[in-house]
Image 1 (cartoon, rainbow, N blue to C red):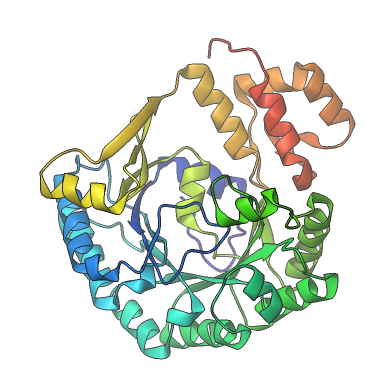
Image 2: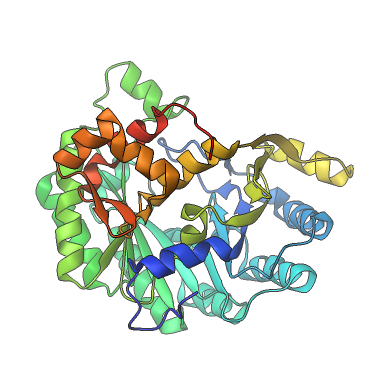
Length: 392
C-alpha cells in the first residue's frame, strides 16, 4: 500500500485498490450516556455498571477468534461511545488484540468519541495507550440543532476537543457533521462547517440525517414531526464539499473529505472488500468471502461469551455475481472509482448505464469507472443491483 505521507492524496486510485489486501479489526463499545433519537446502532444507555464485564467478554472473544491472515493494518473502535470506557480499559483491549493477533507497523488505531466525554487528560491517556486517530461526533456547531439531535455537548466543547486531540499528539482528527436536521438554516449549516474546518481538522465526514425504522425520530415523524428534506440535504452537502475543498480537504468518498495523508485506512479496507474481524455486540466481520455479525443485545452477548457459546447471530456468503455487484457498489462510492471489470462493462452496456453515462453521472477514466456527480451515486447503485445475475 502506498505510504500515506504528506503527498498522498486520499483519492489516489492506488491507495483505494491496495486497501483490498490489508486486514482490519473492529471493536464495538455499546455504552452511551443517552441514546440519540436518530440512532439505530447496537447501543445501550445507563449500563456502564457492566463495563468491566464487557471488557472481559470482548477480551475472551478476541482470544477465541480464528487466526488472522495478517496483522491488522487498521483498528477501529466504534460505538456507541467508546469513551464511556476509561482510557485504561480501551488501551487494555488494544493490548489484548496486539498480544494475541499482532498489529502491523504504523497501524492506524481509531476511536469514536463525544465532545462531552473528552478532556486533555483523556486525550493524553489515549495517545499513551496507542490510539493515533480520533473521530469526534460534533454533528453540529449550532446549539439549537444539537438539541433537536438529542446531543448533550456545547459547540465550544467540540472545538476544545479538536484542539486538545491535536495537542495530545493524535496524528489525525476527524469531525462528524450531520446535515439536514429540521430547523437547520443555510447560515447555521455553513457556520458549522466553517467552525469545524477553522479548528484545524484533518478529516471531515458529512452525513445526511436519516429516519431509521424503530427509532424515536421515526416515531416522531410518523405522528407529524418534520422529516429531513432530501433537496435541502443535497444543498448542504454541496456547501460542505465546496468549503472543504477551499480548506484543502479532498473528497475521497461520498461522505468523507481528508487532507493528504489522512484518509481513514479502516474505511478504505471496507470499501475495497478487504477482510476484517469484529468483536463486541453487533460487530460485523468479513472473512473468506463470508460476512457475519454478532448478537446486538448486551445481555445476550455477555451470557454467550461467559458460557463459552457462539456470539454470531447471522451470516451470509455471497456468490460470484453478488461479490462483483458489491465490489461496484462499494467502489463507486469512492472518488477514485473502481476498476470496471466484467460487472462494470455490463453496467456500461445496460440501458440505465448508458443513460447515466450520457447524463455525465457515470464516467470511464482508463480502466476505471467513477461517479462524477456524487449526489446521484444511489442511482448508480440501483442500476448495478438491477443487473441480471451473470457468471463472473
